[in-house]
Every structure is written in C-alpha cells, then in structure tokens.
Length: 104
Image (cartoon, rainbow, N blue to C red; front, top):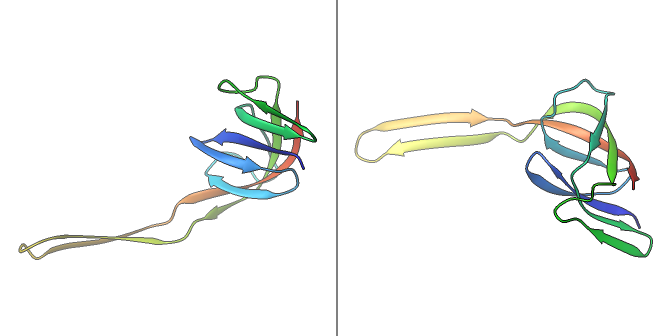
C-alpha cells in the first residue's frame, strides 16, 4: 500500500494513487496536470518517510478532472428584539483531482 499525506490549500490530505479527491478551487482547466511538492509523510512498501516539515525529493502528480460546487449552506443571522433577520446561502467552489503517481 502506497500513500502520502500532502498539504493542499492549507489542509492536509491523505492521498493514494488512482483515487480522486475534492479540494478547494485550483485554477486550471479540466485535463491539466498539477504537481504537489509539499509532501509531509510518504509510505511505500515497508518504509515510512517523515518530512521536517516537507520531503523535498517527493512529488505527487495529479490531474484536474472537473470543477464542481459543494453542498449548499444556509447562513441565518438575527438580532434579538430588533426584528432584524438576514438569510444568505453559500456554495463552495471545489476542484476534483485524480492522483496519478507518487514519485520520490
């Protein structure tokens, strides 16, 4: 089992080759190739490598599959005794990535 923990957009994500993940929006067109250089942990066969804070020789290659929108969130604010109400919705822009290879 080969996996890595990377930092993408300020979040840490456990990734494996051949699987897809939804991360915050990354500019680019579907089909574009993307590289992640901030690899925090890398596990291959029988060895585990820890970065301090990153492993400089490791590279994760992925491909942008498509851009999607996340689940709708409703934000409702009120002020007591003032009859002031505000309703607002939000949908986060996401990018679906396919992890192709993990190199060291």
